[in-house]
Figure 1 (spheres, rainbow, N blue to C red):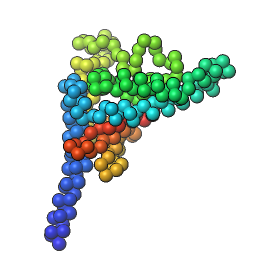
Figure 2 (tube, rainbow, N blue to C red; figure 1 turned 180 degrees about the vertical axis):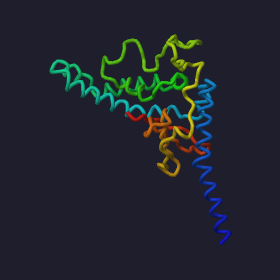
Figure 3 (tube, helix red, strand yellow; figure 1 turned 90 degrees about the vertical axis):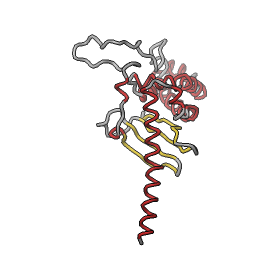
Figure 4 (cartoon, one colour; figure 1 turned 135 degrees about the vertical axis):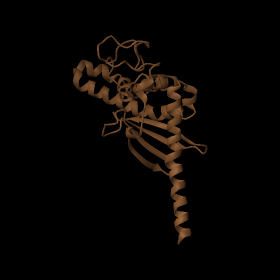
Length: 218
């Protein structure tokens, strides 16, 4: 009986270490890379090729929905113009935007500046003409070493002020085993939020857990 209990405890401990402690270590390494402003270290824990590949069809589909919405509201002439934006063109635009935006350096910059990934996704897939010309979703004002002039207002997070990306267990809103070697973790920027902002997918590669997908809740 004691042998069975001991074996059970060992199994539970092993599963805890594999599915909880080890992914938590990966998350800590990602946080450390962002705090250190180290894109190379971030890339060791996030498979950016996989993240981009998974993001492209999602953004293309959202962009196509935006175009369909524009067709319905724009009248015959506007619908004719929007109709020229075919699904294949939407996919190409989404692919180019994702390739430009989802790089280690840009992700570090966005997180350190407190950018909302859902907002970035929406900007990418916005209706034609909805974004400000000459700016990409990752554009930001140049970092400043001094706080804003508004009295009583908090300093805007910048590349030298990474206070906005501190995450704790309170930011984790969901955690599930999607497959034997795949985890899905829902994360919210606001620890008081009821729903996650993004769902991060982690896969075990044989040498450790790696983020292979980041899906915002649009």
